[in-house]
Image (cartoon, rainbow over all chains, first blue to last red; front, side, top):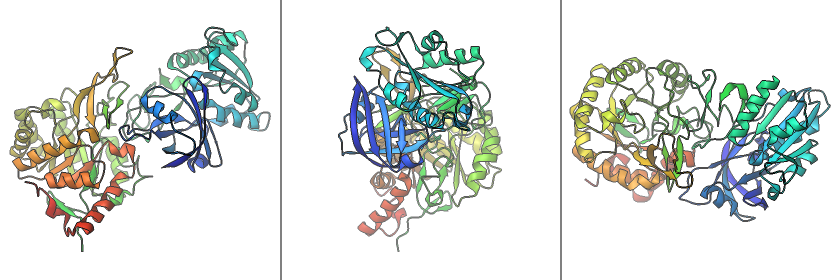
Length: 265
Length: 302
């Protein structure tokens, strides 16, 4: 865990408002799938890092894919190739990859939740069929509509996942959300990994409970420190949290990945 | 030979720099970034007798050169704090200032009784200024008479020197500092955060679930300097100055205004190793300006 400078290797806009930035940073070496970094806008009046999930990490290269959701992320998206930016990480717990061993895995990716699952898909794809690896990996990627260019869908395919596309208005793939698509396709799953907007994660939680399978979900919340000090980013928990001794867990430290039944959304 | 140590409440601190309560956890959280032994002191997150849940989320929001928070003093309670956090800090060579909170005089008194038994604690800082806790908290810290009474009550039972942490949400900070002094406080620390509000104009909703939150960060630093100046001029007891300190110059400025020690708050989130950098840069400033003892600058603007 460190804070350091990272150089921009490349920047692309995947669809309106969604950016794909590759950075050169030593933080990539330590990064695990499902962890996140704080990215600090190059603006002295915006002092907090933006928690952005790690989309891919390999060697000294870190990939982040994020949506402009306010002035801070807008500033980050405006950075040019060869510029530098401060990042801190890797932070958080990451996905429990062992939970996929021998299982039919379903990745549910809602919109800008997809980047949080790509590194996991790559790891699971490379382990598929091997001892300790998953039996199979399917990914449902949900979008608002076709204008989102099914961003990252081909990356999930390249990772070895069978990809199903869904869109709210049916302009691409199956009409409906990721749960609708999983039901339409009658996808068998022994374990679910999901990231997306809160209403989707609530639906994933009840879907998994209905099916009686574990679901690991990655949460987001506004945060200040990213290291568990400020207690800004908590989620309500079903049981008393071992660290806080109240029914709150720190998303930055105990999370961002939780087993869905542990948290109250 | 330059001397960056300061004497505060009859104790010697290796340098004047600590953290503002709530911005540094118990030190554990930042120990990968900061050598805690380098700090003047570690000031912990507020502790109450029993565990507190805190406020709903969103609890934080960024503002220009600052942030707002409404955490609501979530904490695991004194027992867990003593057995886990304090046990961790005991292994370090750094004095510990424990921030204490309560909903009522009785709760403050009980927490102070419990904590002042611990030899690993150097000082207690009484949080009577949290803008996010209505009962206790700021209710005590914005009325001079209530502040006087709560100070007397905790002083009666405390075996440790007591620092009263003052709220800036008052008209006359000097009056508040004098009330704390009259109540027997050994020191005051200021400023806590300013009560503030932020509205999402598209959703027509409050950005923080608590509607209001405490504003901190460099945006408020000049106000903090003014208040530290006014408070320290009004009392004989020493002052810990805080509010948006972002660099050594800010810390030196705060000491010139009258602070014996300084605390770094929100900026720890921006730069986790900031406190150690400030200490280094203060030393460089002393060398550059031929300042032999940092304590010589305390209140030099009075």
